[in-house]
Image (tube, rainbow, N blue to C red; front, side):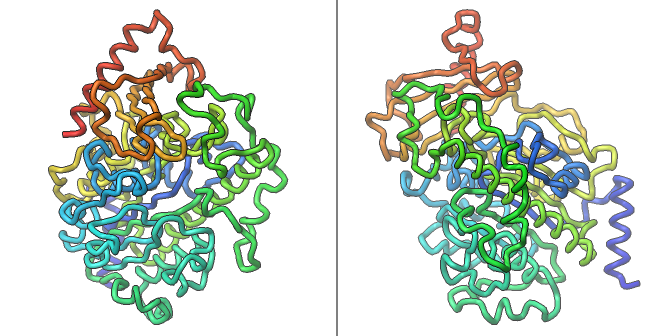
Length: 504
């Protein structure tokens, strides 16, 4: 038996006993899906779709049942991960509105660069939706060893979108990104074609993993986002489940009560007609969209299963941390709306699983109810690997929670939407364990303006207060109920405080 395999076996034994030493350098894989709701997994309540591998990852790791994104829209949510800050602080809004970029200095504090500086091989794969320093993302391309990404939406067949992905044998997105990760991680010559056939524009930013280094890989899907559902399963070489799975269960995908006449917000806040056409469904088309979404989630679930098998084949499974999350959820007709950006649970509540082979066995399979946010992921990954957390981070490491320790933790989460295009209102909110408060601002003067500082003297045009415990679907607005006046005022006050605290 060679030394490497002996080390892996030793790590596995120590992990089972819960006594792995901090001196070891674990590998890290962060898998980030797109527009995936919390309730899309079997373990979180999905009744039709199947996610056996993600469910198993949760059983082997820790599932956070109260995980949130604080800016529920693609670009800002991803910028929040890069910076480990709220949008109110980093000012990296949706590019068409804010026109801001992540600075080179800020990128240097990102978890990817922190791992790079600690001697890790690094990879960034898949969807990229926020600019870093310039339009060419120069710091990303110059510093990350394996940089294989597409700007914005990848589509179901990324090779059709541009030159980057044309060297893939697997043309469908999920399978193609798995092939790319294999090309990065696998030793030997089997994937020489991937590098030889790469477009000249990316050849110099594709370096194989150095086998003498631990690795950190961030894998970004553009599924189950609707922009990547088009054409799904239409080619004979596609995995069959993309065109046939759940075909006999389509009637089991249920729609919200009263849809499409179930809008709960007044017309001066938003109307269904203001939303982009791709988020306005007939009942039949919405049901078909739910079917396609479930197929996309199943594809990602297969990716996770294949990933864990690959790690085991490489002898890396007992030394690799895996984190799974989504950039935001999506409304499928709830409140009469589609899409995201709204601060309802369907948009901001996301699946978050942390798997570490180094966790004590007694902590595995737990489901935790602490209020955590996507920005906590960078601090957690660094902390789990014994690396310092940059002082610029506004987040907290979840490591103590993962280890079952009793620690002081946040009592509420500040939520925001600063995207002022496509008919969406500017919003702020506070989500505690029991209540959620949301306030909306007038759209008359802020269309396509980026206003993280708000407008002086501005008052909300509408407010909502929900008892999340008793009303998880947020149907009963208590803001005008005098019995809840004290709770409303407390949440108003806390919202004002957090706006100031998080901006500084």
